[in-house]
Image (tube, rainbow, N blue to C red):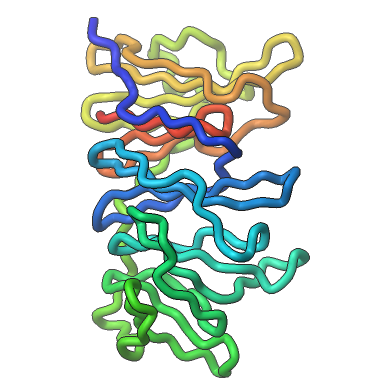
Amino acid sequence: MTQMLPFINEQFDWPIWRMEIDNINSTLFVELRNSEDKKVAFGAVSLLNGKVYFKDVTTPERWLTGIEAAYDGVLLVHNYQSANGPIHKGLIAIEGISGQALWSNYTLAFDHLSANGPMVYNSQIQPKKLFLVDMKTGELLRAHQPVIDTPLYNHIVVPQMLPAELLKELPLPAEPYANTLHYLEHNSCRIVSLHTFFQEKIKQHLYIINSEGVIVYRDLLNSNIQKLQPEAFVIHKNNLIYLKERSALIVLNL
């Protein structure tokens, strides 16, 4: 029986709060947050070869910042107007391999990611008018054209939440807590995440079952959590991506 092994198993120093994937070159970016010291850092890992490009890139704003989008080898991050609200302010572009800042603009704000690149607007001008921005230079290229600037398909698939009784034929070694499973089928694999409850502790597990009904991979994702977690994994193309204990990035090739 062949057991699967992770293609990427990278431990980060701080919890991972957000992930963003650049579809053009298959780079996965992570946002790391140290809540005690009020610090944010960013990391980048290639989903093609597993290489870690960087793990601790920071911006001048050390806390009120976060990932906005990723496109064509560049990570776009934003600041916040204040610590008490969700409104974003400004943009900083970070080169996806070196981690070096390419440009910054504190009057622009991000709207959405199109097939041709990010759509931004000047936050100081109303009504809002969208422009396509050059990710490498920050130059505004042209006004938004809805016919050609269609939304970018991100190739990300998330699991379904299903009642456990619908999948009772699966050879699961643990009884699901709350009678729910996160479930997805991909390349003849059946991927399942479930919670268990034992000795006043909630744990979250992941199983991969092959076409013969054999568990070929398993992992404990969270060993002591207080409540049920959202979907534990995603599929990007043929990569199964998940977090372990919030700070380890795991990727398997399916």
